[in-house]
Image (cartoon, rainbow, N blue to C red; front, side):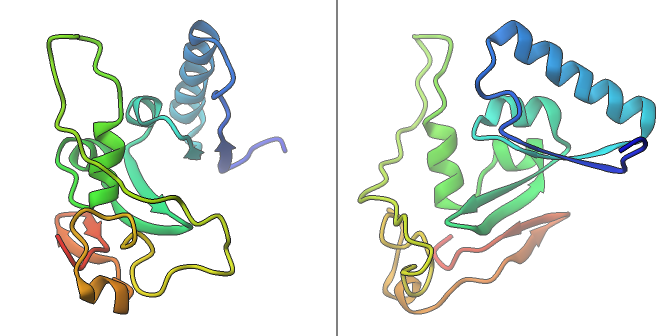
Length: 152
C-alpha cells in the first residue's frame, strides 16, 4: 500500500499509554493533512474521537443512532444513548458535575437475537411503546445532523 486514500483505524490507540497515544494521533493528523488521507477512526473513547475527527457516528448494536459534525454531536447530543455515553465521560474537575443518565439492563450480545423495534429501547430511559414496535430510521434534524430516535 504505497498511496492509500483511506485508512481504517479500529481501536488503533486504545492500549497505548497517553504519551504514545498522543504521538500516534498527531501522526495520523499529519498524514491526513500532508497526503489528503481519509481515516475511518473507530474508537471507544469520545475524547480521542473529538481530537481526531471532523464527523462522528454513534452506533448501538451495529446501527447508527446519531451522526454529524463532532462538536455538534458531542456538545448537544440528541439520542439517549449518545447522552449516556457523554455523561459517562469522567470530568477532570471534581467540583464540576455532569448530569447522570441511567441506562438500565444489559447489552444484547447476540447479533442474531436483536430486540424488535429500536435496538436501544430496552435500556432507554425515554422509551415509549412505539419504540418497542418500530425501528427508527436515521433522519435529518438540522444542518448535516441525523438521529434515529422515536422518543427524542
